Image (tube, rainbow, N blue to C red):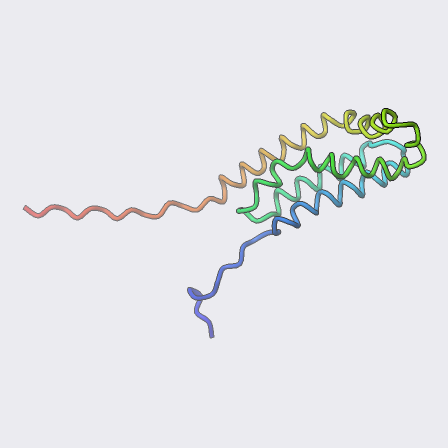
Length: 147
């Protein structure tokens, strides 16, 4: 039988790599599905992007919280851009300028979504950091000086 003081406490939450994969996969899936059916990055993409990023901040281990707080712009870039390339494979034969416009236009159109999700993840992360900090160790009171 193990004593409670000798057992190692397991950290609560997702590891750092899962906090990166969660919004990356949900955003890429939302972008691909939205581009396949609607031919633009609209509300389903935005919901998948926001949901994945917010869930990553809420579910990650506390010590790994900084990454998910600041990753929404990178998730947008590394998930939406490849999905646009895959979904619009036939339209990418127009040269480098045409390819750049094909990839950049949906990212620019969703800039305000990116800003909102980034602010939300920063605020949620800061709230979580404040609420889950450890209380300060009690300081021993000084011994009274005997006269």
